[in-house]
Image (cartoon, rainbow, N blue to C red; front, side, top):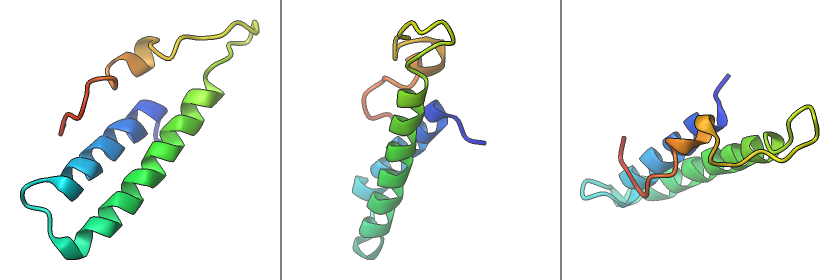
Length: 75
């Protein structure tokens, strides 16, 4: 099963491919749609992770998500 941070990183990778210097016009829409799916799944995972069992709100910058907040990396 893919985690939220992994979906986020995959969305970034697909967007970088879609708008990168080697992007092919006939594939841009596919990469953008695929990136949207992964971004939506990342958002769903982040939303599901906002409450811990004690009912307290968790920070989106918790350890599992912290490494995904770098702007537009292609890794």
